[in-house]
Length: 327
Image (cartoon, rainbow, N blue to C red; front, side, top):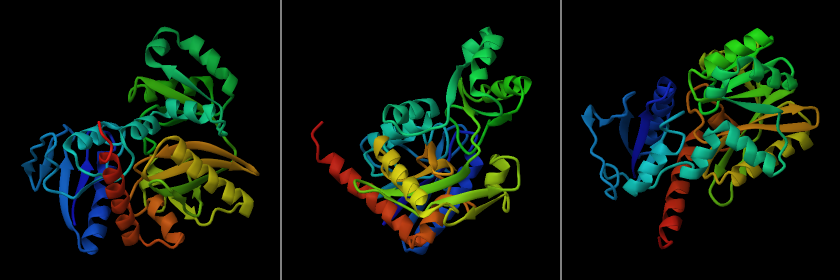
C-alpha cells in the first residue's frame, strides 16, 4: 500500500513532528508499505524528496492510498490539514475536521465535557484583549481557582507555552507567556492526583488501552520532561485500584465518542483516590521513542507494527463509509 506520511508543519511543534513521523515511516516501511516522506516546512510548503508537491482538489495526494498526518499543534492537528485532505479526497488517519478542531481548543473541549457531565478540574479562560485591558481585574477573577495553577495556550500541545504559577506575580508572567502563543489562555486549578494516560483507537467501536501512570523527577510534566530521554517514566498499568483503572478506560472511550474522534487519541486524566478527572484529549499523540500512545497499546498486546496497520485500516473504513453519503 502507498502511504503518505505528513511531517513537520507550521507550528512550534515542528521538530517533535519530524521525530514522530520518522518512527511511523520506519514502522510502515518495515511492514512492506511504499512510504512517501511528505515534509511540510515551517512556512507551510509541502515537499517530497525536496520537490514541491502540487495539490489539486479531488486529485488525491501523490497517488497515495492513505495519508498519515503526524503533525502536532496548529496547522496540523487542528482540522486545517484534515480539511485539505478532505478536499483532495484522500483517506487519512485520525480524527476528522470537526473533532480535530474541537479537541485542539482546550476551552471548547472542556465545555463539551461539562455539558455531558464528565468530571474535570476547575478552570477559566482568559482572552488576550481583556488581559491587556484589565490585568488586575482578570487576576482577581482567577483568584477563585486558588494557587498553584497551570496556565496554557488554548490551542497548542506538547506543553509548549505552559507555565506553573504559585503566586499572583507568577500568574501574570505565565499569562503573558501563554498569550504570546495564542489569543486565549486557559488557567487550570492544580490537581494533587496522579497523571494517568489512556490510549484509544478505533472508528465506530473504539477500544481503550491499559492506562499508564506518568512519573517525573521534575516539578511538573513540562516540555523537557516529555521529550528528553529519561525525563519521564511510564508505569504500566497505572498504580490505581482495578475499578479506578476501568473507570479511566470507560471515560477515555466516552470522551473519544463525545468529541466525534476516529482512528486514534490519547486521553489524559488526573486520578485522586477514587476520583477520575478528564484533562484533555490529543488527536495526534506523539510517536517518538518516548511517546506514550504506542507503549500503552504495546502493553495491551498490540505491537507497534500492528497498531499502525489498524490505524490505516480505520482510515480506509471511515473514508469508504463517508463517501457513500450524498452531498
